[in-house]
Length: 169
Figure 1 (cartoon, rainbow, N blue to C red):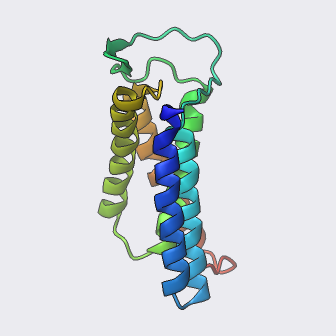
Figure 2 (figure 1 turned 90 degrees about the horizontal axis):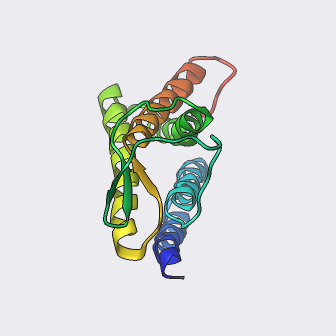
């Protein structure tokens, strides 16, 4: 039960933020954009900060290092399997939603936020493995794939926003 505590706390923070935004944002369209982004952040926390395991690659053996309760994979690109590509897909909506909410952001901000996303998710899993035995793997590949997903999601939005039939601004 202790391993679920971080997710419960983060859910409470996200729900409080959603209530705050719902009360204080006046424009319905801006409210929709912000609440959609917040909802997706909650989905990311469900994937990354719950004591559950997802295995889409079968019985792949990879080299890892154990540091206390944490399993670390520090060698990137050991297996470019379906799990690798699903991890890119996982953060693409985040990049899309960020660009939808703030289309004026520069590529430098988007690239930096993508890196920050990967580092935050993996360092959070590392810390929570120590504190509550979340039993998650901390991988360099995940930082790289999360980073790539945010960039590709933002690129997708920017390409769609150029189309005349795509009027989500």
